[in-house]
Length: 284
Image 1: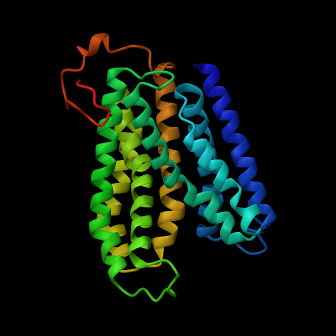
Image 2: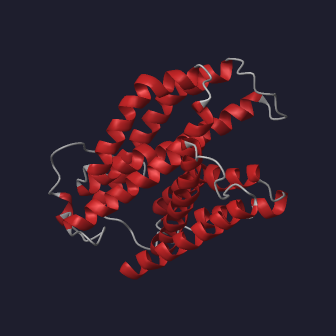
């Protein structure tokens, strides 16, 4: 298992090198000639953290569970700048927008493989339950964000030039993106807490949600300029940072094996939420 983790981290480093190379080649990343703006720092952080998280996660899913679609999808996104022209817009889209879409693909393949029994390594029942609860929490948050922010923004005239994409298709793609981002921003900290009892990712998530519900969602609904920065920079970067915080806390607690069989038949987790017939079809 540790060898899989090391290989996955190596793939994440390679993904960072590719993303930074694209950024330098397309002049997204350039030596500062003037004082660096916070938005620029956020972009640079996203161009490093997001590819690392995506590459590591996709490689780990492929090596440990034989879930290969995320890796294939990431390879396709990585080819976008070379296929459609080397300029900054394609690079930013290929690096940052890829994440949430790939996460949804990963979840779909994992659910299908779990249903037909084709996962290379089957997680414990407690792991299945944590995944189910995390996905449910992500769906709830995505629904709230869609109702409070996405739909009002979609209905108003923001002054952005119209595109060739029909409005309904644009809405569907946006909701897909929001769901994918919610799976890692909200679902992962909840799943980590449910599976391992980790507190740090949940505390960070709670702090963000307090700001999100009070200020961010109303601002997005009104068409504020922070929409792009939020969707492309803040969400992906914060998601990766919360995952890293969870890994650090897990290591500090000394639990190196995520599937170490700590369930004892599932009898040791009678307190708390119980899921029967969950997303993966297992009775817990």
